[in-house]
Image 1 (cartoon, rainbow, N blue to C red):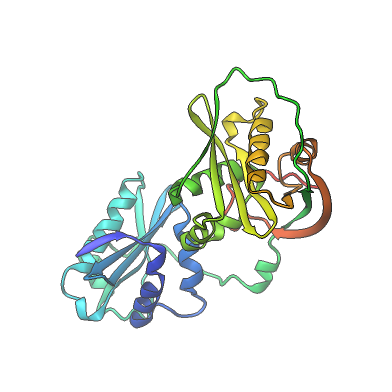
Image 2 (image 1 turned 120 degrees about the horizontal axis):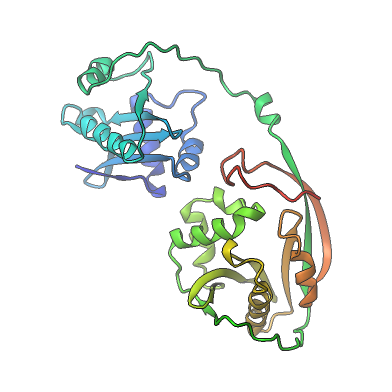
Length: 329
């Protein structure tokens, strides 16, 4: 018996197991629910693996006070082997390690387990004097989610600029290529650099989707170091013939306001020109740092198109922490 954290490539096996035990009933959509859940630190999905097969699962989450247990399932042919108990203990320990004072769960009336209530009583649970009330989230609820207006500006540079030499800062700077940066490290930089500016798109991507981009031989990642500490990063995309796009670049919050952004941008542009493209492109939007547009123009980029869109507020969909406030056009 191997109990471990869920991995993205477990998705179809988990969905198939839940189908067998009767968990996949409307409006539940595990292909939507699982990727959303596992992005967040206050939730976890454990799987029980036997000879490379997923034969059990349990989910847990918390609100800082109560912990909740969901989707405790064992494949029918493996029941009676103690797997359900082991999964329950594993999730209880995960919740206890977070200092929660109470753990709760709900049993569906159509639970296919032979006697789920007796199982949980045996494990120390009891029926509480609480009334559980529920309401399905409707399409009208989703339509009422506030949307944020965004103006996107597309810029290009068609010839390599000749820049004046910047005065050297007191700090020691380094711009180093990161070969196959581990995915957790990439997510850290993307979320920490981009969170204040509402970078949300790749927060919704699976590890496989991100890996397909950043591990492409024509995509380069560079870490910007200040006095030996990682301070930001840049992503240079050479996948289009004749065009190099600056997918992302920026500083970690602790390094903003020190005049370092111009060094990161200039080094990124210099590196982008090394392959001799016809042009370099980048885009920015009104959610970005207020100085982003003029900074790009200062180094030689010129706007060539603009688009107005609206996006669902990513704070409400879980990609961006609630304490961030958007810049509005």
